[in-house]
Image 1: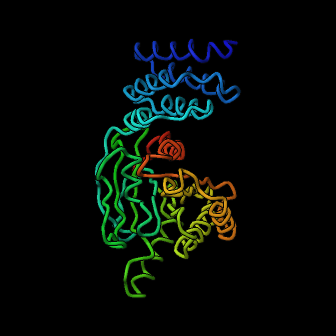
Image 2: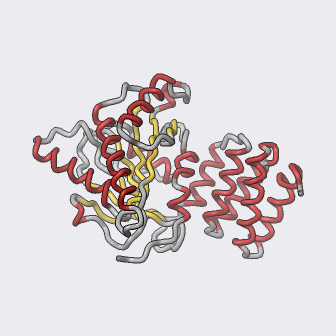
Image 3: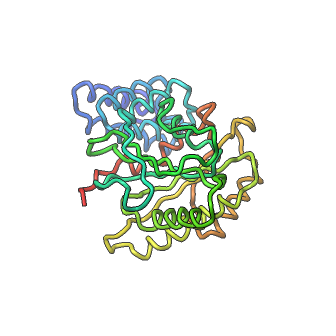
Length: 314
């Protein structure tokens, strides 16, 4: 065994050399090795500057697994990412973003089988700002000054055309503030419920909740829709219909409380998730689009989607 010193220096140096030689799979295997070692002993994690160099190199090689191994090693080693590492991470994972289309019904959503991650939340929760922060772009997702104005599912292709590391990010309409007639609101809710329960390409729902205000009725409704969708998909497992659905909650605007979310808010959200039938292990991620807090944690949520081989068109 190489031990702590070997994991901190020898293995990263070997991975970099393999990347220079163009052998990304071998380099990824080495990176996964030092990430596992860091899980067992935090002191074995490579230093911050080494992780930056490795992440850049893996990004240049378009090796998603290697980038995530570096991120995992930093997390296991208790290494707080600085602004430079956060930008290096995004540059390594996001090479291109393109607006595809806006959908207003199940029939108008894109085809092609690309996995989807949907970002959903109340109007004014900071959703578009967080999407822009996660992608490292200034104005990919439209930030409206009129809450509830956006009424379509906006599809963005991330790393389009790649077999691994590509997906559709879906920026969903802000809910709760739009002044619409009851029949139209009912159609929106029916569309959302159907999308969560039966959209075959949908892999994950990222639900943004404002950490600075009490949990709202709209958030509880979203949880209930997700809980019902998770149950429905579990019943369909193995049928070839919709695959299992992952779900995570991102608590926005945490910078307004020195980067913390109160235990009262966490308890309230946990109780609501349990009542809605959502998975007990649903992740809660504090975030701030202003300070970029939570950027690396959101990308860790997307690890499985980013590692998925692109589906065949159906």
